[in-house]
Structure formats: structure tokens, C-alpha cells
Length: 350
Image 1 (spheres, rainbow, N blue to C red):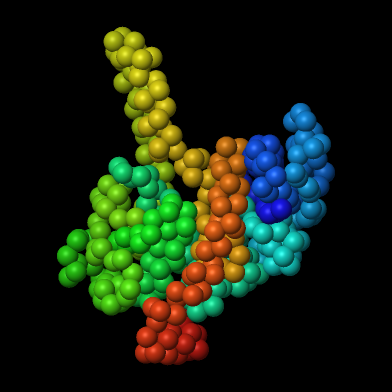
Image 2 (image 1 turned 60 degrees about the vertical axis):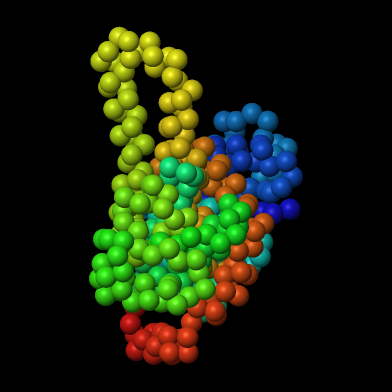
């Protein structure tokens, strides 16, 4: 059985909401996976005791006597060898679990995973991939915050990894890839995007050219590539749309009597729209490019979001995307680029 470690102490509302989400995931396992709750054993038992009929659920607890604060620097978090994040990652490293899910400090989760699990061979920078809703389905945005500064080759690798993940998760044979820029024309953008555009054009990937910010939710491409600085801003902006939609809908409905009557009839439609823009439906973002499966959930994750993050981890394990990423990365690198990357890293460039 697949075992998924859940960082019970990570998140704004941990361990309450995290344990609750883990229990909900365990209830619908049907023998597919087991949830391993990692954290303070006493606190976890206390939360589990609030729920009925948990004795027969596919769950277990692994004690960790430290926790990482949501605002703690990754460098400090790495020193906590017995934190719930570190213990969960170490279980994965030892092969005792098949995946890790955490709604904790993103920087700490990312740093611990990269140091503990190591990178997929020939991948210089792992990236966070975030699924966003679009007019015709969904798109995968990466990097969503792991790498503030990127080289052109990094963006090319993000595109390849995103293509592999999107293909496995959604059954699209050759996902289209767009390079986020300030215009659709090749000449638009900065030096990094110009060089990345050339690399994408010469690659075997299904590159559709530059895309603008307005093209993302329009579903212009299946995968959108950018550096983590821009990607995280785009992600946070997109997440805010759900709250904006709800607040404006409530305000306008309350303002007019006929709107209140119509709202009752339109409730199924409104619920469907809310579901499309609700980050809880997507669970979490995979850290792509490490030798393992690590899902980083939102710090404000509700039990529903945690449950869906566990389901996403299960699917990532089954699809075994790392094997294909490892096979395809070699096709992207010319001898000059490989040599250049090694020289830069040897010189101490970040």
C-alpha cells in the first residue's frame, strides 16, 4: 500500500485542520493508501479523539517533537532535525513512505526536501508547479515561488517538467507550453526570456511562444513558464479572485430584492463557479524536480484542501513522473549549455 506522510504540525490551523483533512482522506482511501501523521504524538492523538470511528482507518502516527514556525527562515528550519517537516522528509528518503504533504512553511519544506531527497539528476533547480483554472480547463504554472532568479536553461527545464507532469495528471499527450512575458512577440521581454525563447524554439517541446498575463486564465497554453518571483505574484493574485468573487456576489445580491430571489434559483451555478476558483479543490502544489513526491499545500489549508493534497500526492506516486523527467532532461541540454551550467555552479553562482 502507498503510504503518504502528512506534516500534522504545518499550517496556520495545525494540527486541527491538518489532522481533520488527513482523517477525511483516510476515510476515502479504499485500500489505495495509508496516511502517516507526523508531529507531536500527544497533540495528534488529541485531535484524532475528536472524530468518530477512526480505529480502523488506514492511519498511523510518527512522533516529532519539534515544529517549524510559519515565519521561520529556511536556514533555521534546517537545523531542526526532529521537526515534523524533517521527520516526514526523512521517512520518504528512507523509503518508509512514498510521498510527503505539508501545509507548513513553504521555504522550509522546499529546502528540507531538496537537501533530504536531492534533485532529479541533471535538474539544476526544482520548481513549484501550481494548477490554475482557465476558461477551457486548467493550466500548470511554474515556477510558483521556489526560484526568484532563473537562467534561460532553468526556464527550459521548468517547461519540460511541467509538460511531463501535466501530461500524466490530465492525460494530454503533448501539452502546449507558453513562456510568460510582456508581449506575445518574440522580441518582447528581458534578456532571460529572449534566450529562453530561443532554447524553447530549438527544443522538442510543444512550445507555443510567449504568453501574456491575460492569457493565463484564458487557457492559451497547458503550461506557463516563468521565474518564481513573477510566478508567486501571479499565483497570489489568482487566489485572491475567489474571495473577490464571493464578496462582490454577496454585496450585489443583498442590494436588490430580485437578485435575492434569482440567487436562490442560480445557487447551483454559483456553487459551480466558486468551485472552479477555489484553491481547496486543487489541494496543493507539487515540488517538481526532487527525487520523490512532495506536495506543498497552502498555509491556510482547510481539511478539504489537505484531503485533496493527499489525493494529489497519491496520483503523483502512481504516475511516477520523476522517471520520465530524468529521461527527458538529457534531450534538452546541448554540450555548451551543460558545460556552461557546470562552470557557473563551480564558480559559486546561485
